[in-house]
Length: 325
Ligand SMILES: *[C@@H]1O[C@H](CO)[C@@H](O)[C@H](O)[C@H]1NC(C)=O
Ligand SMILES: *[C@@H]1O[C@H](CO)[C@@H](O)[C@H](O)[C@H]1NC(C)=O
Ligand SMILES: *[C@@H]1O[C@H](CO)[C@@H](O)[C@H](O)[C@H]1NC(C)=O
Ligand SMILES: *[C@@H]1O[C@H](CO)[C@@H](O)[C@H](O)[C@H]1NC(C)=O
Image (cartoon, rainbow, N blue to C red; front, side, top):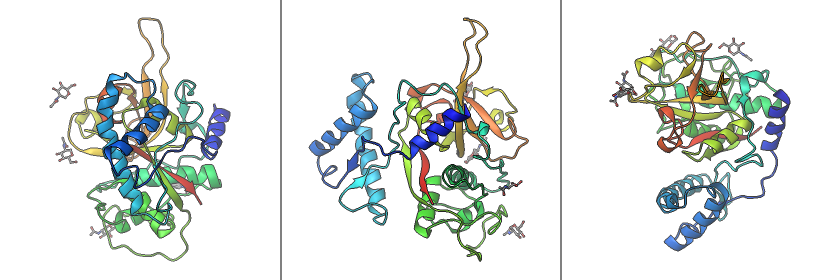
């Protein structure tokens, strides 16, 4: 298991042949957008029901424009005229040779301790630091708690400190600042305070981040095989979710509110007999301390792709940071 994961982690830094780029010309007209879509479809969705294809085109157009605008505001990272559509590119294992089981908890030091957000809506910052901590270890072999509080205090709007935010915007902040401090340098206090610059240099940085296309279970499995991925768990403030204490969580999660957390693996429970097939699950690192769930982790039922997954776990694009230094 560990060897297979290590091999996959290395695969993450290998060049990918099939890159899709989006330029201003690509998004200029319906026709050019269609050309881009055909290429994307052939790469990601070739096995889909063809009747879905037209429906997805509408969604794709919105996503392509959003990604283009995002990159446009980030010229430092990408050349202006050839902007990479920064989505997860499937590995050679996708879609039919994915490992049956991935769990980054089994690989020493990739994950840091489970954090406790307390009375502060900092789940997005904890998920973001967790993802960066993992690639910092995988690439640089350094295990460090990164500063959640720096993201809470300093990452600009639309992030709102303890009132919520988005991991993708936290990654943008780290890219712009050329790094993030450690938690020892800028400790967590669990409330919003003024952004300060601690002494000592930033401990790591990232160059970019990639989205994982929504509602595609195998693609998300492929992505988490490379490194942990930030996901949103929707409706996670139901009583059942709050009181989860172990096993495979199967809902309900139809409360309101979105909660960002770190996806760290997937698997299937053992099947006893044909009438009782194994249950497919995701493994999620939460930020409600170690006494919640399975030592701070959640196993939540996997599947329900057409509905965006249980608790909408695949309903939005997931995101992970890349190119740590
Ligand atoms: C990270 O912080 C936890 C406390 O949440 C601490 O127990 C642990 O030793 C720290 N890890 C590192 C690598 O500093
Ligand atoms: C934030 O938390 C720190 C440490 O617990 C505390 O000293 C400070 O008074 C708090 N600030 C606010 C505005 O609540
Ligand atoms: C929430 O889910 C439960 C169990 O699946 C269901 O009984 C209930 O009607 C749902 N509530 C809403 C508001 O959808
Ligand atoms: C769930 O969280 C949202 C905000 O994220 C809040 O408005 C809502 O009242 C919460 N519901 C429960 C049942 O706690």
